Image (cartoon, rainbow, N blue to C red; front, side, top):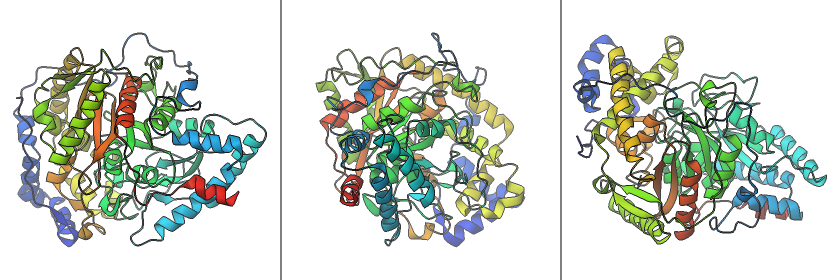
Length: 564
């Protein structure tokens, strides 16, 4: 089964029609009448008819030899953050903040004031950006004062000291509640998530909680409770999701780095749509402690950044074993020895031509140019085929929505009507899946993952577009309800799901724009634990294809210097 997945056919609904459909499908009669039709459109019968001989896919299967002890923490190599940037791309925004603090041209206090003013300005426009949904002014300024004092005494905590960072609302981060994009979850955590704690320990000034698609069960970033996160390249366009606000905040210049989470492209899709860099690490490379438990077997925490080097630095800080997450304990150390080396001779890039060409022509053209950049640096492009492509979509769908439905099981009886209509419909359809569907999906998953590991013996990375299209317009009728658009959702996700199913690292790097000026992303997916190689290759693309910033991007340092 090597054919390219066929487009999904299902009606789009929003507004009152979507609310009615959600209520109907939640009933037994409605599920029998309409739910089965929607599940059929999603490809569930294909999965049910597919034979499987393997045992279910086991968590932690990507672990390998040469494992690191739980107590070991690698020092951050100076090559990641020392100035000047050298051959690592055209910009390094974290480094620009550090240089400004070292020289006295700006300080963390004036930068924090500039961030707060910019957030107020961007959300005061019509329409508002809505990158952040929670921001505590006193907390932000307090963090900045402490950082300013450390710089004044010559004792910065680390390579993010005084640098603004946003955190997706899926991760625990004091003093904010973790709402996961809902209207009703309001508990403030006692502790930071491990990834948040690690960037805070490096001195980051956390500027607030970033918007997200409700419970991460969509890919547009349209949230009926907190407002749609909007794309800084065009406020009438979606950001992508579910790490929508994280990508928008970086693209708008509110911070050079943000934390996101990725269960089905939720870091890479918004990074692609917003023209920034997003890394989904290997499963287990970054601790899930303190992340909302939404989709256990496909979940990953990772960074979104203004440049490859910003992402590399943030990743190096948050990666590593954590005793509070057993799934993170068995991982090899990061290998940074060739990071920044633009010579890609000996690197093999796999390309499934028919799959790549199943994207919009401007996306295909941009990705071809990115492949030419990699070839000019010495990489060798090799044509490959990914077997059973049509199954990746449905196996991932059954896996993630089943786990998300289970994650909400205790909340649904009390808060069913509090979810957005799009989320209600998705959870209702997930409830129609059978336990044997989930187990069977994991058995087929084992075979699909084996296909990817076999490809890993032929090539070092697999290259595709990140998304087959650029950012779609935000439908006005979806603002208050969300929308159900299964054909668009499955199309947007068609290149990103395989990495989540297999737990493989994958990065999205900007590689051009379409005729309307909207960003295009190239995805590189690698073997387990080889994130430094992906970052090194992405830096070559970044250096070879200059990308313009978003039109509404703010320059925090210029604003901060005017306050000094």
